[in-house]
Length: 245
Image (cartoon, rainbow, N blue to C red; front, side, top):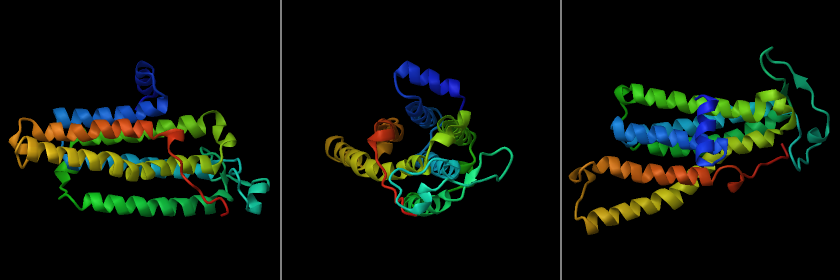
């Protein structure tokens, strides 16, 4: 997604540019639900890919961060780092970062795979749903947005020299932590409220009995989840890292 789009949206809504990428992602979700009749499978797929791409990109860029981690007690964090040139078009990799990155990404990857497996097991997946044009465009937008975010925060103008691997790992792990918070404090209450409304107030057993019922229900989830994702970004959600590696 072009940086100009994120900046225009962010300036118009008065939010940070990183929050703008979340808003654009949820805008794609809303458009897919309303105009392309996405069901819950497509929404879950886009969410999981957004988390996975953020996790992989920021976890990888942590290898190139030159500064030591804050409060790192191991001797290697007090020594001058030795850069390793891996490719002419990439920044130097720092060997001392590998242990911390590997351990933290293993921990985060375990939790992500657990939640992803639970979510994916709820649906029957077909190639037609995975390869639709609208879903493909949304996935490309999510990947492009996160690539621009990595570039802006850690690579542009050699900014990796002033960042520690802990900075990048925290960004990589935050979406996984947000999954837990949003599931408990956003999705669960909405589900309970919808169940109460449909069964007790409207006396219907399925959203199919209502005009545009499925679309309304999905938007009822997507809009609050998007708002919660923006609120939980950056310093509003902390990740504990083990710096002794």
